[in-house]
Length: 436
Ligand SMILES: CC(=O)N[C@H]1[C@@H](OP(=O)(O)OP(=O)(O)OC[C@H]2O[C@@H](n3ccc(=O)[nH]c3=O)[C@H](O)[C@@H]2O)O[C@H](CO)[C@@H](O)[C@@H]1O
Ligand SMILES: C=C(OP(=O)(O)O)C(=O)O
Image 1 (cartoon, rainbow, N blue to C red):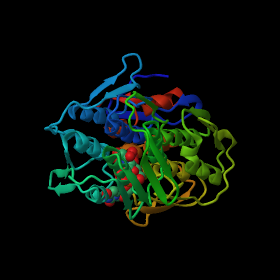
Image 2 (cartoon, rainbow, N blue to C red):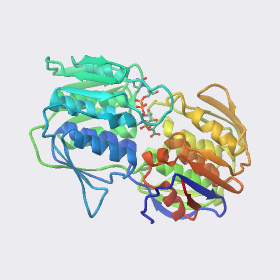
Image 3 (cartoon, protein in one colour):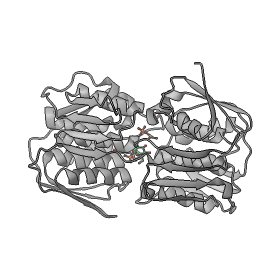
């Protein structure tokens, strides 16, 4: 597989032959980011494998260095990262780059452990509308911390009272706030119960990592429980970042839209189940084995059933980041389809107008809900990636659009994928780089 990371600002995609072959996904950005922060919070030497080389992960590792951690990428295998415990007791002076990623909020507990305070700019990441942090602040206040806000960012000051057993009830299943509560309990070394936790694979991965680090961690639909068990050890920890479920689903949509046939390796079946249920509903053969998704687009027998793809924080709900590539796929499929993402309320505002440039006719019922009738024939045009998933979805749509599509704004795409165009090229897609 080509490993060169494209630096062009735009790519040209010419639709054509069905995608065929075998490709391996990178490690998951959205699992790696909290795992990196968890490794820092645990305060032990940690070897993380399968760490993706996308921009947001690079930024996170750079931030960790600024926080005083020693962070090394293996020369022979750049996907292997070693994180050494902190040497700093003064808060870092400048964490401006934390404003470039959403996941910088995960660094708060590690900074509280080391310096007693964390001052960070408001998080950035995908410009997909207002995304709050009020639940994170409620979590820290529950632990007795003081939270100060200003126009530039927020500061959390560790409370003097030491908690031993806390229960936090979340009003809804925020992934970020669930991980914040868990990592805050880790540095407190206290027992924690979270009711209405987020139970996404990314949260389950943090719990599994913490079990390795000596915690008892369990979760069911209602409650997450974390109990310090054997925390005395300081042996190095080793953990593999799981394969990127969103990259896998995006590639699966690309293969299906081209009526191709491919194996997508390196992803767990359970992590992609809600998306593959949508494939089955539409009549596109795709199944997941132990670590491989197989798509047999040439055997597609469209059912004509309308797809409802509603992003959800519920256990086993449709991950918000699955919704955009499924939209590209459903545009070519008969039925009147309903799509919604109220979790990232600005996503449709980025994506739908760009799909319209390719000729898609999509009725925006609201800022977060839309409906359209398929099948629709798209035509190549110049489009722009306003966020990671808009970028990847436009590439998928382009594979079924007549002629050539140019996708610009690739810096967004590269925040979440080290080289998605390279993976598609490996399956036979005609994608070339365009000069900026
Ligand atoms: C880096 C990362 O992993 N990003 C993911 C994370 O984003 P994000 O951090 O936004 O996700 P959360 O699950 O924490 O938040 C869910 C919703 O609640 C809102 N909210 C959350 C916390 C809070 O204190 N106040 C508040 O208003 C968010 O703006 C969002 O609308 O989960 C989303 C799905 O859940 C994914 O689509 C994002 O890719
Ligand atoms: C929304 C996303 O990322 P972030 O929350 O980091 O902006 C994403 O991964 O699609």
